[in-house]
Image (tube, rainbow, N blue to C red; front, side):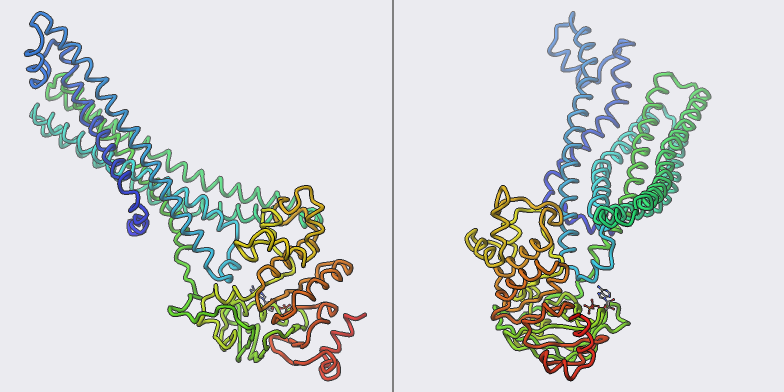
Length: 594
Ligand code: ADP
């Protein structure tokens, strides 16, 4: 477990100064409580109640400085001032310690969160498709917070509590030496060491519960996320009751597992206090049998209590650490996911390609078992418009997804202008491709920024020019704030056709030589489709275009048609050729034409 934590210590490197200051202030605070307070009881109370002298180094200074008739008064005041002084030192040091550890903890948290988030950006699509989104969000938000709480508490207590313990033990030793009570000291040490066992016992159970609690929380987030993204379906299928029941079942489970963790957490303190009380009881008996003075007993008892307090806190810290360990495992799950499509060490620079695309004996499987594409051999010259046709599930979308290297081919290779995609960087490959999908994603931003995604840094004029080509201009102008109208989550506030036009405007702006239209017009009514088709006609000019289509109207601009069946290309030609030579094509065409 410590190894896992050390892995995260690198994040402390840029924060070394505040971290060390936090530890030092922790040391001062613990010395003030561990040694200062029992010492005060030992030295100050006798001055007040028994007219004793202050420790000689203070007493001697006072004798030098103060007239003998006022000495008694000044000694008394000085003695009484020691308490507020010790408390002030302790208070200031505790504040600095608490403030700086919180600061360091938050910074570390941010770094871990950023690292996990950045890692998620580069992980392959297949990873994202295999994960529940809500669970990933939970890992990013609550697990990082758990780790932060662990780091904060550890850096708060790692030095402070052992220091408090050591100084209290020193005082105990000093007291034992002063009163020659070695056996009392040893029995106290025995009771102190007894308290280690419950800490270990509860800690072990804690990590198990925390692990399950975090997993449950991930499931809750996943269900909530799924539900919030599917409100239309929930309403149209009357799923509200069922959804609430699922949510309740999960939260019930979460509460049950959390309560188990709470039980262990809350049990620890009374158990430790019980051990402390046993120690004190035994001390009382011993004091009585050896005839110890009450003042000696008091400072013994205080030092003993001072020993238990840091142990109690260390126990709680250990529990926290165990909780953090469970979260750390969940974060490491993200951070340890390998990028199975790394960029090559010496990539071939692609620049802006002409747009030749070729598949050489490509086979592909999503799960490593079932082949979705088999032995695909196709050469598409630059500027050709190709339609991919075939029954649903035949592999058309998968074929198109291999061009931007969303997935890695299982065997064979895909080439862009003769360069194997694996020899170029993914960024280079994708900068040459525009994608207009069936349901384009509209980000929570203004219309103009949503289009500008096509070419970050493009001027407003450039963006508006592309918007005009895609007929976004008309509807953008009608909005109250024009191009600066904010679009809500998932582009609500725009019709399906308008969303599609925003995506087409992005593609115009990006001006990439290769274009993938993924059933771009399938979800539109025929009137919108006709209009969009006009924009697409303009967009495909001079670009190698792949149209994944089920509607035959959308492929009339294609110069070439590839017919897919069960992961293979069974025919390749023009509409007129295929209608005659390919029965499957004829069948599909006749059906769709009705
Ligand atoms: P088409 O576009 O021709 O309808 P697809 O390429 O979408 O076909 O799908 C081909 C096959 O691959 C189907 O059997 C489908 O179930 C499967 N498939 C598609 N996408 C995924 C995915 N992300 N993970 C696993 N299997 C998938």
